[in-house]
Amino acid sequence: MDFHLCIVGDEILEGRRQDKHYAAVLERLTARGHRLAAAYYLPDDRDELVEVFARTLARGAHVISCGGIGATPDDHTRQALALAANVALELHSEAAAFIVARSGDAAYPHRIRMAEFPLGAQLIPNPVNQVAGCSYRHHHLLPGFPDMAWPMLEWVLDTHYQVGTTEQRYSLLVPDAREGDLIAEMEQLVEAHPGLRFSCLPSFGNARHPGPHLEFTLAGADSATAAAWLNDALRTRGYHVEQP
Image 1: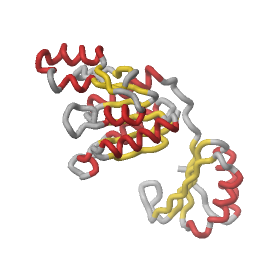
Image 2: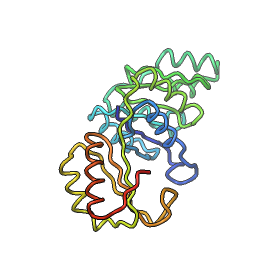
Image 3: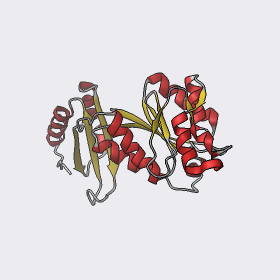
Image 4: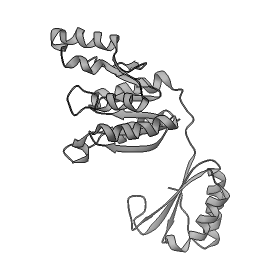
């Protein structure tokens, strides 16, 4: 399954906090045979969020969103998803009961707002403080706090999605090669394999190889056949090819 990730918060965009969600979400998706197809860093701006959610809803995308589901005026994610879906924002009775059980009279008038979700949403249990997230049309709204968001994401993946098959991926490392000298081979490769996901990364030296090199990565449809063809084409040109 392909997922889109939304990371919401001015504090991330302004550098006041460092994002931890991207790496953690990628790790959990990959471990279950899923793929991160896109990622967005979004501000605490309702119109911006509505625009993104309208687009992902129209595409039928599976979305993980972290942040912006609190009760303060800078939290817009729940409201934006409802607006994008053109449905009402309603108080979810079960989510409200969790908040009241934890906070008592202090749940009103503000904390209880965190139980307002798009009409028809399902709850995502929060094992840390019981303030739930929600799922609506394959859009899963999680809090911004990593210690809450990550176990909630694991619950979503394990409850709503079957484990996928790990995607085949091949890497070829070519020392002392330059991109401009191999464009013809690259174009021939992607033309022959239109379902292939392909990248070419030049480097002046890194932990994978100390000197200048190119690293080709091939994944998806026909990746094994494509990697074999590219390996042969590079060796025919006289390049030494490594498989890191």
